[in-house]
Length: 630
Image 1 (cartoon, one colour):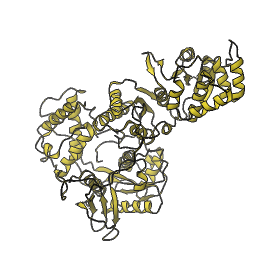
Image 2 (cartoon, rainbow, N blue to C red; image 1 turned 30 degrees about the vertical axis):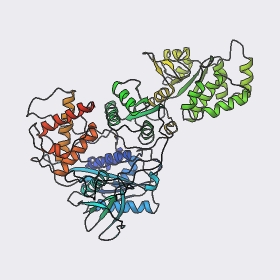
Image 3 (cartoon, helix red, strand yellow; image 1 turned 135 degrees about the vertical axis):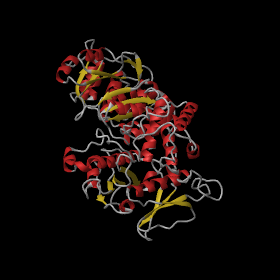
Image 4 (cartoon, rainbow, N blue to C red; image 1 turned 90 degrees about the vertical axis):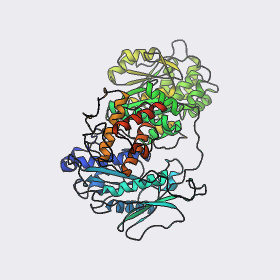
């Protein structure tokens, strides 16, 4: 990750204390923060919420902030607990940091290690800017086998000089240099080596690594690919990772809740578009997508939720907006919740099963009701069990409003009576029922920003809550909801609560899914001007402009230039090489989900490359995104 822009302070915002302590190092430090953030997301770890003991090993280049404090500052800003160690700017210091991180894992000092290199240094671009960052997350291979994600590679050994490398058996391999004036190059070379052993392609020309026959995955008769990074002072040996084994429940045909969050609405839209493109191109299991986004992402203020049974359906809904709920979580404590418990009618057939399939804990609460009543208590049981399950997921009511049968449910939830007494009241109650003293209007006066949750299809209580200025949500297997009259299922209602900032335990809603690699946070990219030469500039917002803006941004990033490109610009004449054009091909694949080789790009100028990418996108029927760089 090497960019010429002001990093996204809205996300990785440094505290005022750190900004005041080192204003000169603010920009390069934020670059390192962004690199760590993206690497944590790629590994399925959530910034700010990571429970594993995570060590931070930083190799900031000269001028990258206050010396000796980069690792501690990163750990402080992202809430990472574990050892934090800096390595002075010198040749191969990033690879020395990798060695220390590996050792910490082997000795049990931490559960995962983050190695980051960056700051300032290296050759300046045309505007004199020199900043970059690279990061990898290391974890024990044995701990990845259960839930993922699939590792990019395995470190077989690391050491200094000619010591420390763990010898291995037969292997196909290669070597990538990591030396250079910019210490980020050492870790960047390690990333390139991991891609080499993962993809079976050399970083130099995109050709398959030499082997006796066609490449085969480990375990199919071919030895794993290997590569060495470093020099005489420090080196790391990486190997192709074995595929994770073990079948997991795929949740085929079941609805899954997909959540996204960002620091601002524009970033949230970019996240949704990038995810839709990725799901269309790669089609991961919907259960894995739900689990990864629920447990492996930070929870920021702008939020989005959608449901779907497959990657295809989720991508389609994200693109056309069908069933997408957006909301904003307020800072600090979540908004209070009011449970609205209406007078119950006879529940529709199968309602209990639909609740039990979505809400963990519902079945146990329903069984407790049946035991107390000696029979199936009908609507009472549904309301009580659903409210009890939701409380177990983290949504605790600040007030209870009940009418008729719902008033008795409210009394049980408030602890005023037990289930046995409730059974007597339900059997003996008359037409007047047992209303609670509280009303939606009274609750709104005490909690004007509350969220009103009705247990059942949206009815009179929801209408009263909305009239009082509260935000109403209906928890129902299929009641009407919203001004458009669209059906809102149970997961959609839970998603609506999450977008409004309620502390739902999302991990319990996506049991059975694993962790997979998904697009990370769309940090704000460089502000680059459109070319003034080489033909007319398309209107903003068109697909042609989206592809062109992405290509211009990526060229500038890889070539370390800030502009001056035209449609006739030649990649190699402007300083590109075979390694950089291979990176360009990989970026295009990641952004648009199309396959293009370095060889195809090498013979085309910028304008022809833009036309090629647009043609490939049209063939796959993948609409290009809004132009933000990967």
